[in-house]
Image 1 (tube, helix red, strand yellow):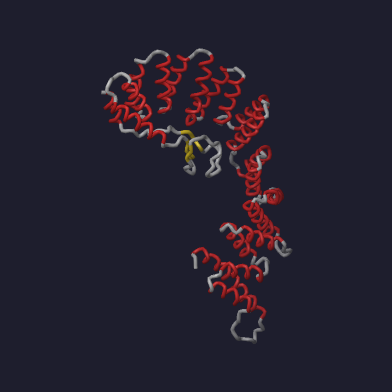
Image 2: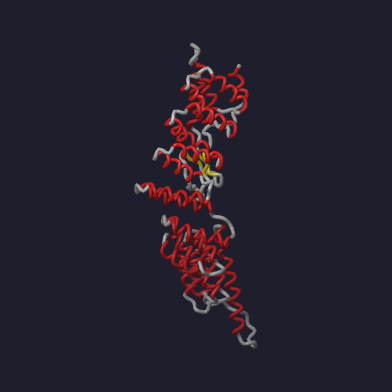
Length: 399
């Protein structure tokens, strides 16, 4: 018998004990013969002995009355069915509990909560939403009901309703949901942008930043709107806020910030700013951008020295590759250097660009909500190279 089926024996044991006690209470005291199980009970045990536990549980659920003494057993069975993926069975068990009139209000509420989660797992979101709406006013289950309502509204892209859910959850749970609320406003702003309503999108992004001033997504989206309208000073301000408030997203500001500075002919100022940022947040990708800016500003002689100096303190595979390219362009016999450069390319191409700090999900594109654990703002950019390049490699090249 598979190990998970032993869990099914627990409610059966509880049922048999209750049934025996009940029969014992009904038996006249003068009768002293041992209790003999009825046919249904024996048939259920035979199912277990024949390694057919599913049939045994179905039979026990059918013949066992739901009352204040047995409701815990039924709730446990329904929950077990749902965890095993047998949602239809879980629904039948919990519907059977709800249909009873002899239960207390608390027991009925618990059964409705379990039934709502059954509906959620089976995709019957409208039914689940209806049950959770009722339970959201029940003091003992308000928090769980609101959390499930929020998940349903997110799945249905009902962002305003999800915001209301989180606002109520903040009061019930006593903790902030500003990260989630900010992203819901960003989702609404994205929809407005797709409809061509930049003004409404901007207002929604302001609300997102009001909920969470450190929301990198809202800052980046606001900067993009500012660039599109030619407000480069405002865009620069917003992008620098990303580096200040959420340093892990610094890599994401490189391209739009370059666009802002290029539009105003301030490439040298951009180089100076990136050099400052590199000192605060070492990044292999930023090293390459700075080396390229040296070339654009006709400062080619400064690029190798910059790379040697930087690699000595912050080893970076992409920086080392860039240095090798610069050296290879100045010498005739560069076959070995070309091979090393190709090796660097292959190592970088095989790495990921983004990683979830909660579940470890990895990918090459940025997801504001992790596809793995469904957390918001848990996926962060990372350098695509392996930063733990041995110092000796940089030292060897710099000689």
